[in-house]
Image (tube, rainbow over all chains, first blue to last red; front, side, top):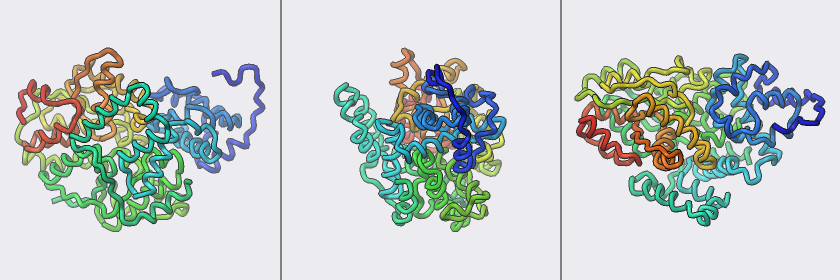
Length: 192
Length: 285
């Protein structure tokens, strides 16, 4: 929590207006009761709490919220959205911020959570369905995780799980696609 | 015979094949005829709703349009697919429906599989075929997030403390144990990029399950199953504990109660063996 230390923040409400217009989520209804943060199961891994993200949106700190780890740590468990007394879809706001972070290319480099999502969608785009084995292979290659695992020996654990899956018949090697792949490509084109 | 459309989802074609086999067999035994939705596509899961709201709704909306055309209610076992389909339903019936590429009139109902099984008419079918009570099993019911939250999307009636699975398993003769973590998050797909988060969350679940005296954890979601089953040994090692919780699908328990022979085969596909538990409970398969 080091951002505001010796810094004067002049509120800029244009970001709040933009967020509400584009996401259709009423972020301004937040009165900072912190119920979202109190129920959030993953605050231990966040750099800012959910109620702080709301506050930052109010103040117009766009770069800060697009750059933070919190939006990518959110597990979309929907506890905050469910419990907010002002019916703010907080998990939906986290999604909106992730979508904008990608659009503006902010905070996504070397971001493994982001890369996983992107690789997942690219896999859906190919056949209309996800093939878990290909998805994991792509992820290991593109994030460099595979190489890291080779170096630190943790690949042995993964291999054990993978072979377990294979012998239990839970890892089909060939993907299945749908007939109308074109339609899926069209849906996902807008996200490239 | 109850006829319904059925959306298995991508992981039931792969890593959750055990869930799929148990669902399809048990449904057949209790008189539910599943009609797999023709040419269904991936719902987009967490990836789609994280990176594009519109594409996420459109992916699920395509399935809804197909299901409405098929004309029967739609049953979905994966909690996340269910949640995404419900989100698309609300979007396509809401004030911004024209922003999406598909239409849905709301003429069919979208069911979470567990919810579907907890209807009186299905329970009556199970009761007719009931072979033996599941005595000796002391499960905690783990519902997870997506089948219930947020209730504005899922239409859940009891989202903080669901009891449907508790009642179903008690009905099967299991000694169900109440616990406070029924709908706490397991971290789901974070297991790929942030296993550290998942291990922390799942450790808390195991710790509580042990404290309340459960001897197994029953789930209705294959993501929960995978996170609790596949990594149980690693989590035990990491936190210096010795957890032993078979992670069972509720459909497998229905199978056991009606004397289905294939149950053994499904259980063999899990990582944590259920055999010691089944033997200790005196339930031969």
